[in-house]
Image 1: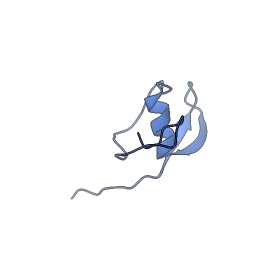
Image 2: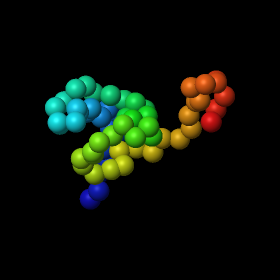
Image 3: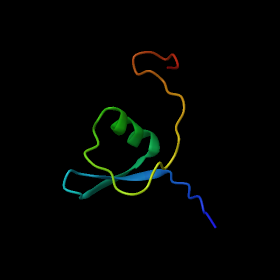
Image 4: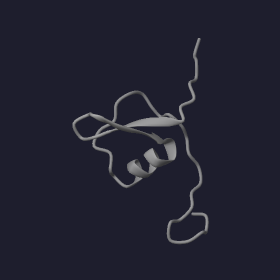
Length: 61
């Protein structure tokens, strides 16, 4: 039987693997999109995120 888990936060680690904070999936996606992730552990994806807002304008991107 396959169980699907719903995660709402990701544990942010520093480059040495020391826990720093629990961050939202949206914050984690920003880190991935900007290349700020040095390494990842575990099986993914945790979620599929759709849609966004531009930081420069309030228009949907």
